[in-house]
Length: 223
Image (cartoon, rainbow, N blue to C red; front, side, top):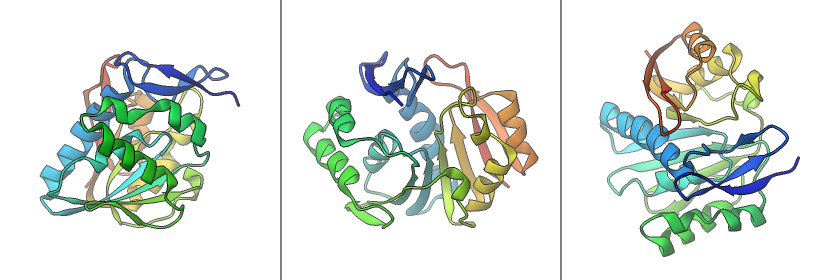
């Protein structure tokens, strides 16, 4: 399947799939979307709720590694154990063109962390920085079977328009089961069918303001 690197509305890059007319991140701004949905609405909220010094995060759709990179720079007050699941890893030549480090304040350190993440061995939890550990898993979302080990899930799969099977009750039940009690799931999606699928498996779901280009997003909590 053909993939192209494109610039988004905030100057950061993403991968575009012409066959699906779908992007890995919002065309209105890859960086803005990642910061709004996953860092501010997800990580900030979870840190405040849990009030502890260590968190476990699962990312559904590791993709370019942008969400992981931003999470790695979250701060030194908390240690993060990050698991990124990806069925089709991004190619090294694509990663070089994306150049996410250039849009972050500390370019040199960001570049080092980004490269270390993508050169890290798969299937092992490895230290990337003093406070950020990463395990990349090459498998489908249907193969996820962890139980009550994550505090937060970044649900960043391709949209329901192109991969509806990833936005169903069976998938969200896997997410629910993998979270600890009071665990949080955030996603850029806001469709009614997605919200209802989450609620059907037990999540308490709220609609929240979305990133640029999207009116709403969803945050779900395992009560």
